[in-house]
Image (tube, rainbow, N blue to C red; front, side, top):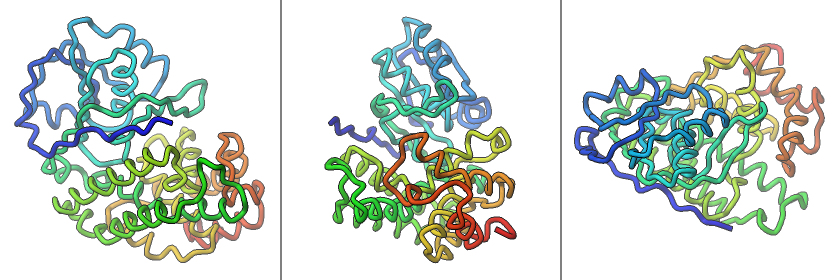
Length: 337
């Protein structure tokens, strides 16, 4: 088992970046426009991937110009995945610059790509450096600024799945339930609930704390060598929802947020505090169509088996079962359940 490190995280103004190495820039037009004046780069080539397509990433890696000495991934989403993939293939250093904290993907050591219509995670290694400019994050749109809070809060329901698997003899020697690890992860999630309000206001101290919490949780996942402490029913819902064409305009947090409430409802837990925190942070829970929420949740048992995510409570139910119907009703995400 490889225990990957975190990227080197530096907190500084983008105007302090003085890059002399010829660079490949992977970004999105809107993201780059918001920071390019503050962080001029000696760009050799620029790419703007919209999706995490393996074919596209392979093409970019194979055609990286030889003068390039460093790769910059700026913005969010697909550029981060492309950056890790290309850096891994070409053995170039990678610098990630998030313009919003929409997810934890700037911190992780894997590359999430779409291959043959399915989401796959490849071991690629972390970025060399992660540059955090708190002023840039503070000025991001409120509903997108701190979506990564959902990644930390999701630990609460993921731990339910991990403990459930242990109690029902469905863990393995490498994924056995570790109370100390669960306790650490729960503490991170508890702190995330406390900073939700300030995050919604763009408070720099809360944003710094969110960075710390994400780093601690990703580091814990790296150390354990699995994601049982951070991936359960809620993430399966979000992953499945992301494959619907109708959710293309939603953010990752706008899919994960409902997943958290649905997972808590499936475990018959009170989700009022989770809902309040998510909403206070500016994460919108009503961006998925009700019919899509229902369809994705009702077919989640089959999706879990399809992607090999067994060992949780979904093992004990089937598509459109009464358990799912009642959980959907308890979540109050869809009128009439």
